[in-house]
Amino acid sequence: MEEGELSPGQIVLSEVIFKTDSKFRIEKIDKKSKYIWEVEFKSLNDPEDIRRELINLSKLKSLQLIQSEEFSGIPDLVILGIQARLIRLFQYTDKIIDVPMDIDPLPHQELAVLQMLELFPIRFMLADEAGAGKTIMAGMLYKQLSARKQADRTLIVVPPILIDKWILEFKNKFNETLYRMDSSAIRNNSVDAWQVGRPIKAVASLDLLKRDEIRETLKLVKWDLVIIDEAHKMTAKILERPNRAEEISKTSRYKIGEILAANSSNLLLLTATPHRGEQDVFSFLMSLLDPLAMDHVNAKQMKEFIQEKSRLSRNRFLRRMKEQMVTKDNKRLFPPRTAKTLTFSLSENDPLGFELYQEISEYIRDVYGKGIQNEDNKARVVVGFVKQIFQRRLASSTFAVSKSLQNRLEKVNIFLNNFKQEEDEIEISEELINSFGDMNENEKESK
Image (cartoon, rainbow, N blue to C red; front, side, top):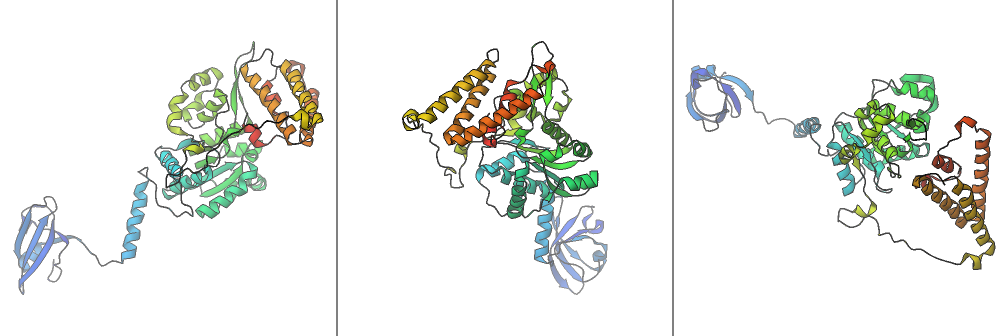
């Protein structure tokens, strides 16, 4: 070092002065004369090793400057640098990063995202009751992974009717613009439409992706994060039929789910109706979260895997009812629900309506009842469900029930026209449910 370079905070070395190669920090400087300084040094290896030395020009030249603690920088830039460093380190933690959002998350939403972040990779089914804000929680997860540079390539798969809702929610609440993937863009550009190897935030319809030509290109595309809304629409089940080997039946939507699950690092499934009374359907859906399940290619292996699903469900599945959700003040988020049964005399108020009610009930018992004489309890439950649907329509209006009966007649005629003798065994539950072309989504999901 030269004269005038000596200052507090510097890290220095000098075997001449310290008789060691340890580093020391200059704590204090007291100038005794023009060329003599009394300097207090503190060892970096041993905080108790404090030395006071008289330094002349000769000893000054033996000091080797290692680092100078400088505090003359621009404070705002220093803070930004620290924050940038923290963001880089946050990818190694399961804590929520403070990212810009135009929402004030509710406690159950923050807890869900925290539970997801505990997983690596994130493969999770969020099955909260309708109204919990699953879209918001999915957006929160995206922002967290984006801050960690783990969501550069994100695909959100939703029913066609919900595409605009997702685009609007991401824009208004998270200031993120989703690219709408439509059939023309995919058909014209093939694989390149997915911008392989480049960042993209896309939203697409599940029914669009299940098309044969699009499904083939999708097999070649990798994703950092895939979010699938209304995931229960992807169904697969084990078919057990008399005198036949068990088979796995997969819908085209489920096959898309398999492709996306295999090609994504992180996968989030959203549904309000994860389990509709069929354990194998639920387990097949859960199996998309576990890459090991992809190896179970036949019904026997899959049944054995289903028996172990509780192991997977514990930390990859979350379902909460409205009664469990509270505000930040620990007040109930939703008012209590009370169910009341109201009775009235249909025969007195509407004799013709009562007669129609009796005839429809008799029709259900007569026609569908014959089909379940040799079936299991599941088929009986389905028949009860069909009867309930007709009764709901009748309670709505005679026009509504008339429309349902007309749709039923058309479906039966189509079924009979396409009927093949060798396929005389049908799944009664599927045949019954598919006979209602005008049934809304809530009624379908209540099955």
